[in-house]
Amino acid sequence: MAQVESRNRATSSEDSRKDVLKRMKQEGIEFVLLWFTDIEGHLKSFAITPNEVEDALDDGMGFDGSSITGFNAIEESDMVAIPDPETFQLMPWKEGETKVARMICDVVTPDGQPYEGDPRYVLQRALDRMKSMGFDTFNVGPELEYFLFKDNAGAETLDEGGYFAMTTLDAATELRNETIRALESVGIPIEYHHHEVGPSQHEIDMRYADALNMADHTVTYRLIVKEVAAKYGVYATFMPKPIFGENGSGMHTHQSLFTDGRNAFFDEHDPWHLSHNGKAFIAGQLRHAREIAAIFAQWVNSYKRLVPGYEAPVYVAWSRRNRSALIRIPLYKPGAEQATRAELRCPDPACNPYLTFAALLHAGLEGIERGYELPEPMETNLYHLTPEQRRERGIISLPETLGEAIDELAQSELVRKALGDHIFERYVELKRKEWDEYRIQLSEWEMKRYLPVL
Image (cartoon, rainbow, N blue to C red):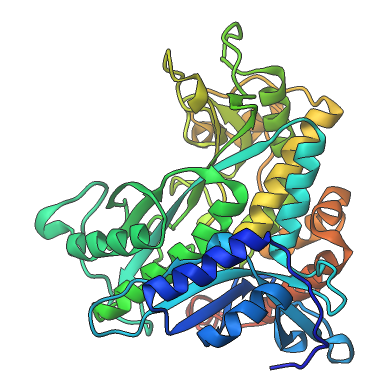
């Protein structure tokens, strides 16, 4: 661990810090995991003993940021992780096992200032912008899909079940049940679960929460899903498109803004039951969708999923019923005004949730701030339109490759504002490197197609 000068850098209230220390004694915690993510969303963790927790809460724990993807260079690498006591949770535990808790950290510089390379801080800044515009809550409900394979060496499935399959066609019902018990034990409420469209593909849906809590929930969810699968001797993956010819895994993301407990997206007098702010928010996400695609779909493999024909939306349009559109507005039910929301259907579950929720919020707020007009909804199946018909209607598509997506992002003033200069520049550099590494590879498809005839 890096050594940094001790000073009071606490980012939380004294009462909340005391509450954590009290709960640790009551629970008999033996180790505490401190978590944060790199800019790609990979979870980073180190453990401390209970004797160190009070100092960690008050002053943080130093570490070497030069070893974390996207963080500082070695000459300015000292970083401090300060646990957020609101995220304290006992990890899933059984009699006879070590009792371990976790807290998610804010990363700061040695002088106590928020670190611009911390994805959690990027989301906190987006929420600050939201509050400055008169809204107090950005609720998010992501639906993460994933596959279960026999191991991580290939894509050998456990079953051939399809959507809502059960009994023998769904080989992982009990595994999902245990996963849900583990998720709920760490404070993540679950609404429902089921077998998804692809063979051995699954979905467990968390109840919506404010964006910061939901981003914390999402990184926890992914770890829990993988660890429970490992206990069953199988492998869980959030890779967007692991099986050729089958649906990929998405993360449909439901969003809404609230002010003083009222849904800012709802207007009972509007034909679509959308307020002016709701329409402008959706218009902002549509207008900036190509620019932020490299955030919500950040991998080369993400664009193997975002192709027509596999339920993954690629056309930039919105609809009330049409699931081929990028954004869908779930049907309004009288008395359910608080549930009015926009469902963005293009993110995948391997994104960094802190950066993704921040980018989505900034795009929506840009629409509100600049008064973007929402185009008419597209209620026809966009996959059935010809390219000429889509051009006539002004429907553009998402980038087709990571290379195209990062070129769009690199020119975006909105994304630079959302991410901040530090992450923006490192993210572009990192993703261009990934694309360059991929595009020079020779695939088996190329060898089979070209070698015999060229």
